[in-house]
Image (tube, rainbow, N blue to C red; front, side, top):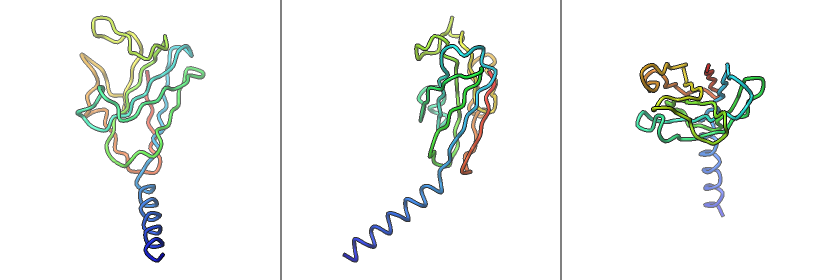
Length: 137
C-alpha cells in the first residue's frame, strides 16, 4: 500500500513537471487572399525534418481572411512553423515547375526567395507557457 501511494505521488509530480515544460503555440496567419479552402499548418522540430515531415499538423479554418490555430502541450525546444493556403482543399500544396501556386508562409516570416525558407531564419525558441507567432501570406 505504501509503495502504491509513493508511486502515485511520483506520477503526479512527473505529470506536473511535464506540464510546466510545455507550451501552447498559437499561430495567426494574416493576409489570406480569400476565405475559400483551408490553411494547412505544420510544426517542425528539427532542421532535418523542416518542410518534409511535420512533428504536428493542423487544418485551420479561414474567417475574414485570417486563420488562428493552436498546437497544445508542445515540449520546450526549437521549432519552425510552415503554412499554406489550400485553396482547393485537396490537402496538398499546388505547384507549377516546383514553384508553389498557393500562398505559403513560415515562422518569423522567413522569406522563400530562390527556394524554400531556411530553417535558420524560420526557427523559433519555445520556452514560455504560451508562444505566439504571426505569419503573413
